[in-house]
Image (cartoon, rainbow, N blue to C red; front, side):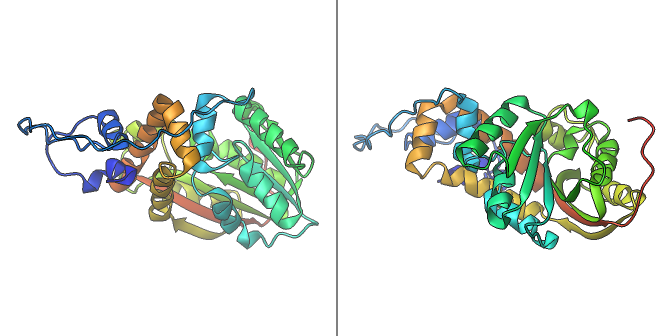
Length: 319
């Protein structure tokens, strides 16, 4: 049994199950939980335990949640896929070092730094969570990329970048958090040069899935109602984008989540993080497990959109 087996709802047998925390701790300790209706078995000699991994000492700028996040997703990342996924998403941009790139909702800036290092290009990352933005700025400085991959906090109610300031914009699993995501999309369009390129990955509700679906509510909490694929495509078309890609990447995304949660339990650093911060790891694993369950239940989708700005669009009056 692995952590994948604990999270994959489809692979679990029907009937009553122990809570995830109980199943995880039993798995972590190498104990097989009996079925809920099983009779007590005679005790057997326990095998000699492995030496425990060392405890983690936090850096002054770290919190337990941040340390767990980076143990799961990699340094500078708070979502699945890491640098390989980011670089795959920006392939259509055909980036060269004369271009400028915006990473909107960059988290701790791992994607912005990956782009800056891979293409020697000026990259700006903006993040609404001030703690993540501060971490991103620190990590860019430590990597010698404080100018090439500048990470900035922003006020999501008043987010405006310079008009026509960027050749390319990337936004990963960010827009779903906004009540008026059509306004943010319009601002991103305004920030692009003519023929500029926009690549978005985001959570969507499946076709015919109601906005208040319980699986989505469990997965994303208090996030505003999700758009469907048709609604996303409509908004791109209203902004006069030439929409080149509208792709369902749910299976790939789900696999990246499960693989990362499995791998963190197998590395020395990951084991140390789990031993030091078990509650924070369990909270993260349960949260992502609910997203996996919503994907497997067919309610939650992850899509990739890629479009090219074709011309000027009137600014929206409620900015």
